[in-house]
Amino acid sequence: MWTYERRLEFPVKICKADPNAAQAIISQLGGPNGELGASLRYLNQRYSMTDRAVAGTLTDIGTEELAHMEMIGAIVHQLTRNLTMEQIEKSPFAAYFVDHTAGVWPSAASGMAFSSATFQCLGDPIADLMEDMAAEQKARVTYDNILRLVDDPEVREPIKFLREREIVHFQRFGECLRRVTEAMDSKNFYAVNPSFDK
Image (tube, rainbow, N blue to C red):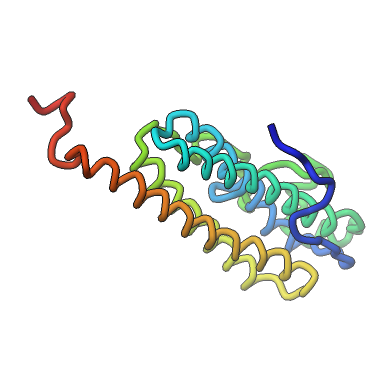
């Protein structure tokens, strides 16, 4: 059970329409390193996580990723709500516009639709946490790339906030991985897997 506050985690107030920025930023909604995949990854991995404190962290971060989806949706909406047909026609956003008009729909910047095939849930604590750490770094790199492409401070500030949160999540998953591996080391997990090695 969550309590939802009707406000964004970081304010998004964009005045200037920009279809090029929208086309790039939509990737952080439904792209291969986006917030939708991150949220689903963590909120599903928590069920098989053996350490309850780590499962709690997965829940916390997975829930925060939902808030990040909300921010990305607000950014894309605000960048596209007042577009002229001339702006659309002269931008890569035109292909998106044909299928979705200015609706916010999860896809990558390349136009590929969101797919759950972009993330994994194995039920193995080490494998899942390693994937989570890598996912946070890939999302950070995507935000780095967006910041290289976008000049508008009204867009850059919320993107910088989201980038910082990826770094914090990476650190928290690193703490979780240390906690899980220390517990497994005490059971000699790496030396022998009792189900295979007799």
